[in-house]
Image (cartoon, rainbow over all chains, first blue to last red; front, side, top):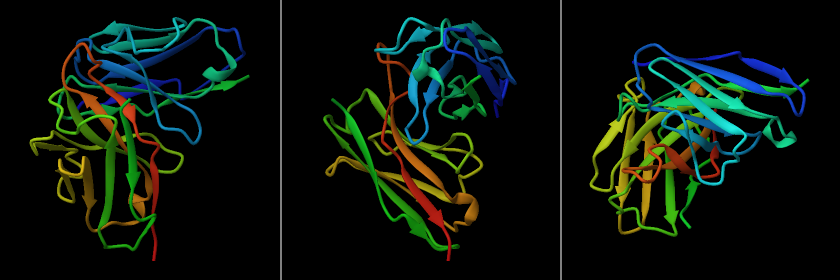
Length: 108
Length: 123
């Protein structure tokens, strides 16, 4: 099983600041990583797939990078609507899929 | 525009079977370009993949749930379903259905989600 470890668990930042979220895989997963955003009471929304590709309609302030076992989601300048929980998910072991534990981005 | 909607009982007794259905609208569940998945989220916790099905009936399950899970598809109704047997309080969660694109250029990820349905396991 491929385990995804996200850090930090919580990130306290102010609007306009840069957010850097990490996802580390227990095994090599190439670029096969996605990022999702989830707001309270809502379903997750796909942000990034295959490590660095933005999904349709996702603003350019969201970017993904990494390959192998270390991945990063960057939000260049936090907007009020970006405060949420973010999950990574791997598909390297398709059809067996796993999610990371999540990082909460909260207002400082 | 593809939409997914979960339906089913919100309360299930311990040891019984949880059964949910996802209705797909705005597109065909028999599309060769899509897989269909179930994901759950216990209150205050993270996401857990339950399993995935293709319209042909091919299924793939989370090993940790495999002994209790069955996912099926009804192409005539444009629906797919999940059954989880012998439930306990640990199965209390919001259950989501979602679409997984089968091939590029669509993103190979869960790109379309239902709104989710809360299921509580309690006597």
